Image (cartoon, rainbow, N blue to C red):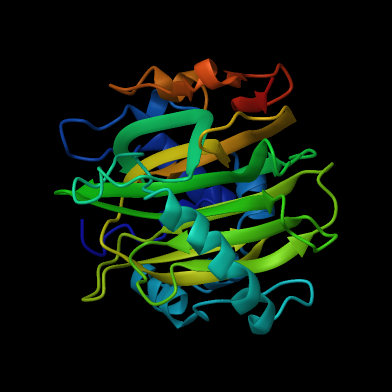
Length: 334
């Protein structure tokens, strides 16, 4: 696809437009297309509440998908929140980047064959849910950090994060947004909001803010437009409704996950960590917002997959609460 759909996910902010597409579903033409009529489509009020207000305004003015993509391209590449500054970012983000480098990190968890014989003094284990069908343009959900306890002689560092990415050939490409804590942090805020773009060689890791309260929900969003430019497909990443990062990626659709990554010394063992969770997420598919639940799974060749390193005491569980439209994924160490 090249510039035909663009930001249609946000067009559903207008109820009348949602009604029209529900009456005449715009199915993708590829063989793996999902049956829209069997999916749990997000209602326009929720989309309006949880999507950027400027997109709704552009849509109400009759802007084309290409014009909206241009607005995304014009957004600042990096923004900071709550008094956080570029100086703060430059002070903290190298520490997070170093942690990723020590792990030879990639979204899909594979080891680079060029460095597979290297010895690391740290080990990462994780738990979370995955969608391995490369058909999603983004995700919007709520994350509840909890305490995310860290210890110098146990669970040293944590990343509670969401990825969207695609493996092209042997190259893993992804963007993500999440919350990080580490035991050596002298900042009483304890939590850092970060984004990552592994295609941005000069600045892959950015820390946008710090948090003091883990006992509440925070909204996040990742969205990739399918309007293509020489630089790639425009994306934007949001935290609490504010765009914190924008750029381009070499894919319009990708795999998704919501995972909790834990890091310890190696040799060593993890210390207990209380429950964190991500919940009530919807994905962007073929111009629609679709609740991430069993109705979506029923349409996928590879339904939601739970991965947890239980041999290390790292656990996870996902289920749909009766009061929620989508799955909740709980993660903890015991």
